[in-house]
Length: 153
Image 1 (spheres, rainbow, N blue to C red):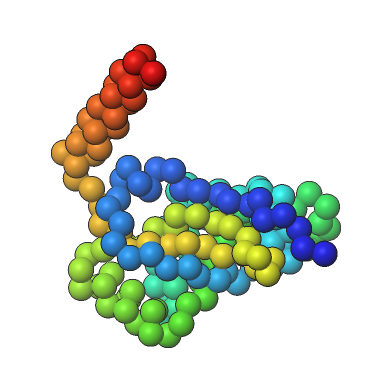
Image 2: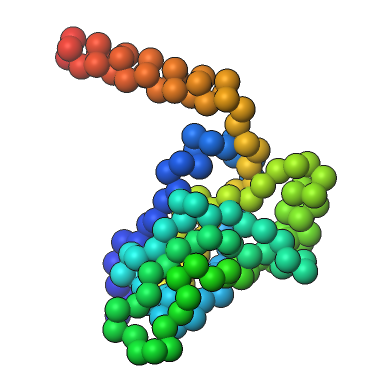
């Protein structure tokens, strides 16, 4: 009775604003109504980031809409949610964030083949303004090149 794995919520702004270093896949501690809302695709990670609190990693500002068929026991849409990683990964990430001035950004929220919600996170370094301009220039050049190729085919 496995359902099709169609939930794939992405953070599109992240690629433009950050330079990615390491990627990890973390589990998320969710309430029952939260996972049901995510399975309906009613979540957003566009404005979210990750933060350490007492040695544990939490995703902040991840928006999961309230589940439509729930009673008054529904969840808070903007609550902090604990991420589940191995201890050595958590220690490594915490050291990098404290010493390197890096940040942890969610890239993708998905449901794995076992039906569990997972969050792909990355250790990232913020891009400077000139890096962003370079990205825009490269994208425009690629688009122009593709148009020229299309005319000759």
